Amino acid sequence: MEIVILADAAAVSAYAARCVANQIRRKPRTVLGLATGSTPAGLYGELIRLHRENGLDFSQVTTFNLDEYLGIPRDHPQSYHQVIRQAFLDHVNVQPGRVHIPDGMAKDVDAECRRYEDAIRAAGGIDIQILGMGKTGHIGFNEPGSSLGSRTRLKELTPPTIHDNSRFFPSEADVPRYSITMGVGTIMEARRCLMLVLGAHKADTLARAIEGPVTAMVTASMLQLHPLATIVIDEAASERLELREHYRWVFEHKPSWQQE
Ligand code: GLP
Image (cartoon, rainbow, N blue to C red; front, side, top):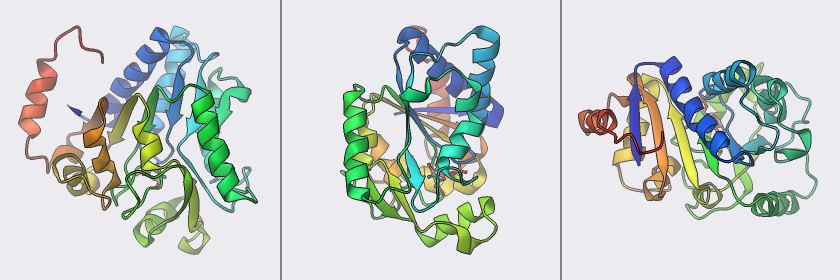
């Protein structure tokens, strides 16, 4: 795991955008895993800027979203279909046929999950998976207790996540209770994982994820077993890390030949 501690959200977004842009320049047919939530919003803003000002070309890029709420239609303003379109996809030249998001209205959820896994495989697997981390330590909607080997499936949201996500809905009662999410095992197959974490309110959970034992209680901790995981965080989120100064030193002395 590489831990990159930067001053603030703007620096985190800019750094993460450079990682994604470099990947796309190296491989125009990149398969990009997308996350929603508020954390990657700045990263998407920066990718849009690179597209407009520097000609970053998404025309051959394929995207797979991590997750979707179950039971709300795709034109619902808080469906992840809408959220990712407004935050990112509507502003770059990703071809509509190359965009993949789980269908939250699927009648046969198991079949939809199998179809999603097959589509990822058929695309050649995910090259770089963008991740945020929920306050419960979840990646995607892999809440505490999720199998660390899980695949794309239906997952129940826990009360803290329903509470957190209620800020996007009229009330807590309007937050869907279920989701379709890539599993931890699905995420672990991405060739690179890029997790962004911002804010002091996530500092304790982040310390458990990075420096605690690998546990289903904090599914982000599974990234400790990933061969190429980069965790990009702001100062506030780094507060509880025991090896904080060491991570800083390692990053500052990173050899120029190592990729961003
Ligand atoms: C949701 C999403 C996660 C996201 C998390 C954190 O639960 N399913 O993918 O990482 O929210 O959201 P935020 O970035 O707004 O803190």
